[in-house]
Amino acid sequence: MDASLSEEQHQIRRTLRELLLKRCGPDDVKAAVRTGTGYDESLWRCLAEQLGLPGLAMERRYGGVGCGPTDLALVSEETGRALLPSPLLATAGLVAPLVAALGTSRQRAELLPRLAAGELTAALAVPGCTLPAALGLTGPNDGAWSGGGRAGGVQARPVGGGRSWRLYGEARQVLDGHRAGLLLVAAHAGGYARSRTLLFAVRPRDARGVVRTRQTSLDETRTQARIELRDTEAELLGADPDSAPALADDVCGALTVVGGRVAAVLAAEAVGAAERALERTVEYARVREQFGRPIGSFQAVKHRLADLYVAVQAARSAAYYAAWAVGREPDAEPRPGQGQGPPQAPAAAVSPPGHGSARVAAGLALAQALETARIVAGEAVQLHGGIGVTWEHDVQLYFKRAASDELLFGPVHRLRESAAWTAGLFGTGAGREAVAL
Image 1 (cartoon, rainbow, N blue to C red):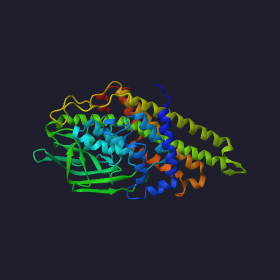
Image 2 (cartoon, rainbow, N blue to C red; image 1 turned 135 degrees about the vertical axis):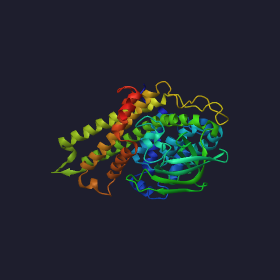
Image 3 (cartoon, rainbow, N blue to C red; image 1 turned 60 degrees about the vertical axis):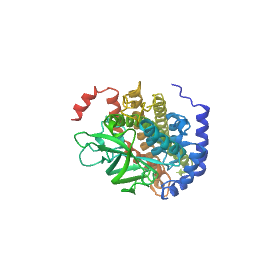
Image 4 (cartoon, rainbow, N blue to C red; image 1 turned 30 degrees about the vertical axis):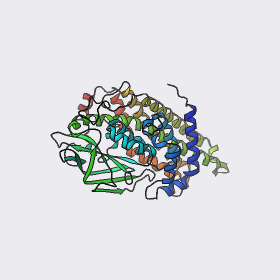
């Protein structure tokens, strides 16, 4: 592994940091999250048009930049430093890779250029509070999280001889779901006897029966929504109805592959937030005086700050390695003839060489980064003293981000447990199921 960054990567980082310093300060963040969209639309257009962030890891033939997960992780580290509220994670991290891996030729040609240009934002809607399970981060991805064919979740039924589908149910905690122009909904089809999990594209501005409610969340910079679907028309992503049973295995496999890449991106984002929280704390310790001396001159404070610095650097190393590992995976290329008949052997469901080890690295990196962000943010609040717990001070934003992310994408011990099972430390998958029972 070559840990050094290329000149192009350094340029991407410098340019993005300069732009965010100018347009995404703490006051700008607080103002943006209180808008109807939950983010600064003009800044999002600037990031899309000038830097191409939504299409950074997308193929050039679809209007993307053609970079990989490593570059997206570097960008996310900078957005994490600024706590940038934006649809970048939901659009570029979750939905675009799934459309690229599973969509038909027509769907890819229709959706990916608009996603890459930033003119269309998207969100992944999974039932309940199950995003880590759906991405295979906290356990084997068998599709049971989507409702199991029983009550709950989102149910899908074909209409008109299978030419269209109708969805009924709800999904909570959908990241950036209240204003997204495209919803990618994981739904259960086939009832209990022929149970399978499929992905459906819903255009909420055109479809009927869609109710979207922005939720009050701990971290305002990462908006969440509740999506209610009442007999809503949807389009099956990736295949015709006759090949849907085979596609179900591909869906869970593709979600797992995307989960590993998203874990690396989230780890880098958490590292960026932790680093900036530590920098602000060091700056404060240099100017805040107690007993006639800056508090940073006291040995006990020095030791605490040094420990936090070591923790951040260790988490950064793990995040960079995870991004490098998932970047070396073969892409989940669309199947030949997709959308024109029964599919070939599912490409995304078959683990490529090194896929398991890359997923292990990503899961462990995410666990370490989330834990580090929580510890650093908590210490930042403590070392800021009385002002650290006030609503007006900016350090509370980092504490809320750290606490919220651990609830959304963890818990940490489950991420580590899943990585250990995947690595084979506790035996086979069959043994895992027996222990779970």
